[in-house]
Image 1: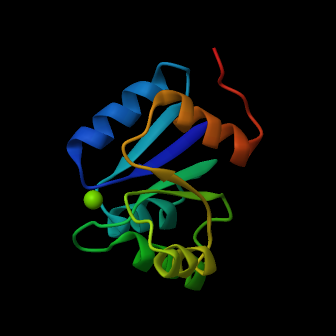
Image 2: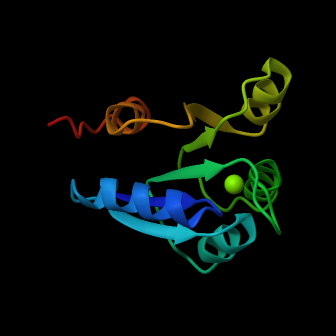
Length: 124
Ligand SMILES: [Mg+2]
């Protein structure tokens, strides 16, 4: 499995990358929506995208709009966020988010969501 992690936090990038790679998952990093968009446009194929909400240059919601408008991927997109306002959550569901991971999250929550969305189990 190959997962794209889109987050401007170097700490989150490193943490999630290490966690995913520890179970044999290939990780592609992008520091904002624009970089993620360029990688997908260039032909990078991933099975799942983990997307941050707040990022400079292009944030999560704007990335979702770009994905839809430019048909960049049909892979599921899971949002990693601290946002819990119902109207905000509804907004990104309408833009294509299939699941949420509330920050901060444990490895179990992360792999549980991955299994929920892809059907592939990484339980140990
Ligand atoms: Mg951020």
